[in-house]
Image 1 (tube, one colour):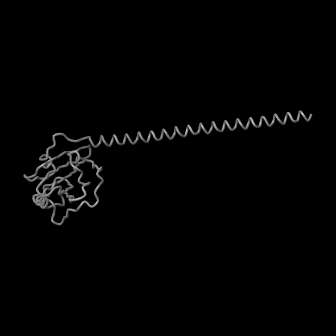
Image 2 (cartoon, rainbow, N blue to C red):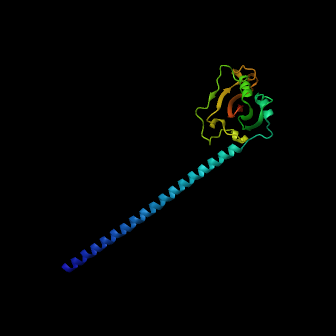
Length: 205
């Protein structure tokens, strides 16, 4: 009887160890499976995020390249927005970007520094001061209708030698300001000795 008891006790211990081993193996399997599931989820989320970033990036690039009007000339755009360029203006550049809501025109030309000052004085009201660009945008900055389209730096990124103002037809009584047909942002950049580039950006509905 005592031997039988020892046998049953031994069998019980063996079964207990076997059960523990099975639970341990099963536990490791569960951990492994959960780990694989977690990695799959993380990989899927990362993939979706990267895909989303790529879609947004592609959409942004497409938007920047989209909807530029063909056949735009500096003289034509100047007439369209009410900006008369002096005859002495050189390096004239222009483009118009349009969508279903509004169009944005960008115009640039270069003048001798004195001629530029005289041109601006006929456009900017006496009480309106053109201010310096004290908080320039990063070099990578691009507006909705960037001047990079014309092969120029964005005026908002220029750190020195630049002054700017905004004008609208209803509040501009100067000789040239009265000709405006839409609100404009005007930038004057003294980019070389005795030379000033005028940037004009206009938006109209």
